[in-house]
Length: 71
Image (cartoon, rainbow, N blue to C red; front, side, top):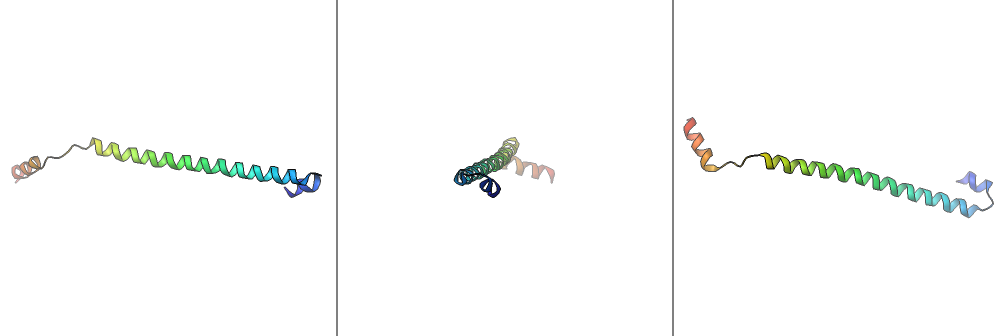
C-alpha cells in the first residue's frame, strides 16, 4: 500500500482501496471458517442422534428375566 501511495498522486484512493480489500478479505475468510465449523458441528450432532435411534430400547422386565434364566 505504501509503495502505491508513493507512486500515485491520489494517496487517499490507494489507502481506501487497500483498506476495503483487507476488510472484504477478512470478512470472507471469517465466513468460510464459520461455515466449515458449523458444518462440522452439525455433522457430529446428527451422528449422535443416529446412534441413539439405532439402539433398541431395553425393557427392564426382559433384562431381569434374562438374568434369571442365565443363572
